[in-house]
Length: 383
Ligand SMILES: *Cc1c(COP(=O)(O)O)cnc(C)c1O
Image 1 (cartoon, rainbow, N blue to C red):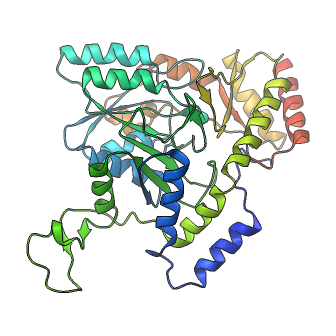
Image 2 (image 1 turned 180 degrees about the vertical axis):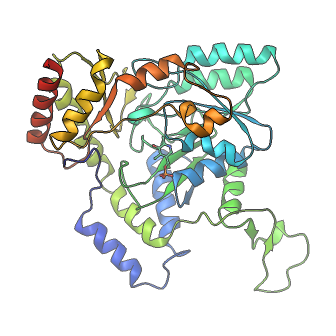
Image 3 (image 1 turned 30 degrees about the vertical axis):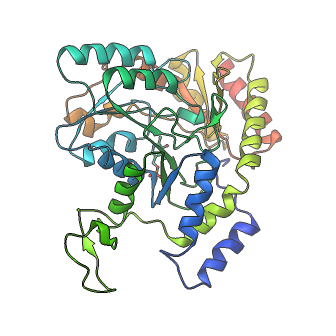
């Protein structure tokens, strides 16, 4: 089976991990800060806080922005459930904003409309979490203007978009957001096995996330409520978590990050090849405007005839092509239905869901495999 996504591991990755295994520190050593510094350099963000998953990073980001019981957080229905769950962990109420039908990203018009409605009923959100689906940024400048107008904070769920650019700047720069999140799960652009990172330009948010990443414990004399008892002394100031990344993971990430640009270039070539091979099929292909350079985490096709989606999906799987669907609208998950959401709530997202298939997309995918995928797809669509 050709998978839909797969990590790319080089000998230097293996050497970097082995080196940590032979060193004094498997965790809380020098690799994590080095990885954080690398990601800060790559994105131009001032602060980087590496954690054990993007889900943890999203949770810490919500907490740092003061999300708590009764807060309102809005995100996109076309995302992985973690984009919404992070707010639920904090006791917040989650709501969704419908998407653009061609990109699958949060629609600025729908956001504005929903904000205007919310202002009338005094139910404006505290935080909005746009998701850069497939690796192409949402229209962050417009969302930022809305944030200024309506007074909410922004967390970019850029889990798919490590290495992408928006308006000629790296995604993750936080120019138009308070915090940006990357995921380093093996299907994403670069990996640490499990892992994630929060990026921000705001030192107070960085401090909060660092504290909460490790139990809420501090050894900083300036933060202590009484004089230090000695060199062993620490204080737990808040209820935090163990969300730390290990040095083993960070060393892998650091090594992978040296290949980020070649990996993105390879994904771009694969996407351009799909564009060419599939140009004449009855499909919507990924749409990018010229403000975006996608990281091409996913290559999502949209069938013109959605009644064929299951047949085409099953046919591709039967032909050994590991296609997938990104995503089942979050609001239709039983957990969210129990909170009062239902089918019909976000019709554009639901229509998108019914048409989409993610084709295999990973650096070692070959031109011949893409040719094969396009031929099978053509046969299935012709039937
Ligand atoms: C993968 C993913 C996450 C969660 O990432 P983990 O590192 O697995 O926790 C969150 N949001 C989106 C959009 C993702 O694709």
